[in-house]
Length: 228
Ligand SMILES: [Zn+2]
Image (cartoon, rainbow, N blue to C red; front, side):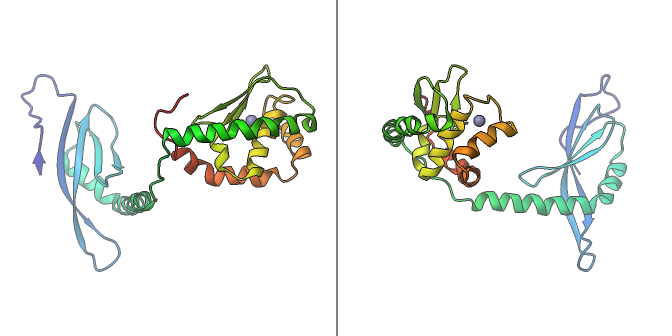
């Protein structure tokens, strides 16, 4: 047992927190009672209950009250062995999956500007085309490079569109335009709203799905700090 901060009875006031590591033997249930010793970090504080945490870096942490003895902690951890092994495995898989994910190449500010220029050429024309089909008017059209949305529509009917739409298929661009124009009728995502979208674009669900599947990666490719 490595004690990083010793708690002694002589202390007049108990320290708010004590952290140390216990080596606890865990039998792996499967395969020949193999004994595994794991370093478990113990964090003691004024809490009343005991809890085990698996950190993303696979450290095992036990949070325990001051009054619990190390023996009691060891017993508790041994009982939770199955849970610990299961969650270690899950966390490991999560970690590997994250590491395997290809890093999305970042666009430069120049790329973003080029996309915005392209969007200015294409989007207003599509808005002119779709507005009468939806049956609404609109205000200003602005192209933005937001990380959070593909488009928006203000109460006054001003429309914003994300320049990254230029990296999506044409039907997705049309879907976002129709979506925002339909907000001129319904400022919500109610059933009536989606019915309005469907009237103009019966296939809109495919575009919505496309954005769900590919949108995040596109937004991740945006350079950091790019407001213009
Ligand atoms: Zn919406």
